[in-house]
Length: 158
Image (cartoon, rainbow, N blue to C red; front, side):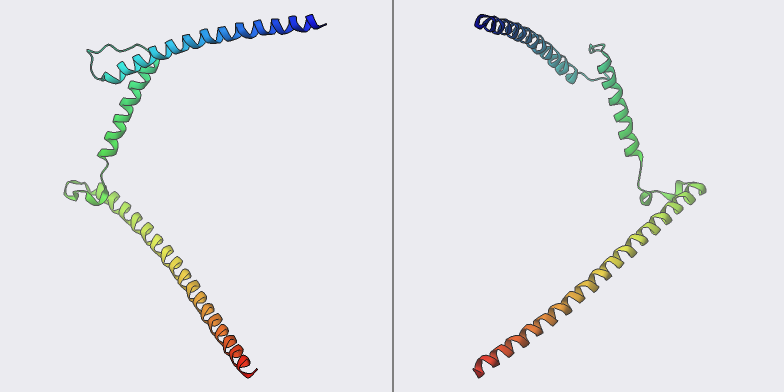
């Protein structure tokens, strides 16, 4: 019975060693691949996508990277091209564009007025609450003062 257990343990130990060795080998391969990819990444980071003289890796990931860079640049240009309505030169605009801008400004005005109205209401309600709290504070202070006076007079009488 004891030798059977020893044999099972020895067998399990051999399997564990084999699995460990396989994992070590896989780990070495992964480290080598990682180093290779890091080198490629460094090369790619140094290259400019617009430079035709550089040698690019023909991988799907790199192509996606270049496309994303182009999209990013296009979005930056769009953002920069948008100007604030209030800073436009109205002399160069057509009547339709002016009408559109006036409508946008009117919408902004209405939005600002509603925000202002909401803020005013909030401030008014807060002011009312503060006034109520101050009144309550005064009431409690006078109440405490009256109690202190009564205690003081009762102490003196004793």
